[in-house]
Image (cartoon, rainbow, N blue to C red; front, top):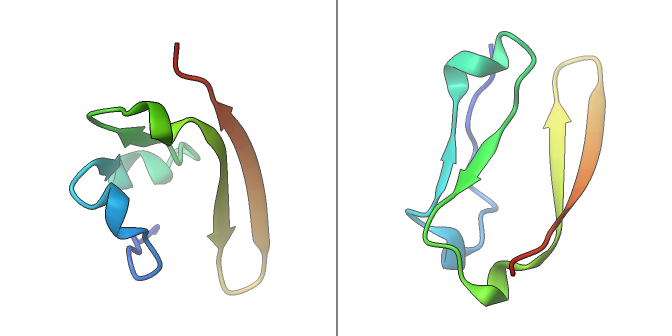
Length: 64
């Protein structure tokens, strides 16, 4: 089903971003960002595409 793509991933997140491919079959497209830094705070946009459709979701990460 889903396939991870890091082709456009910012090098700042290399080896810190984790996805859960098995969960995508259940509609869960979660991403875990490890070793959080204050500079990670901000808006994140996730693009999900397939052969017939595409969607975009936005989340705001707040680090306190």
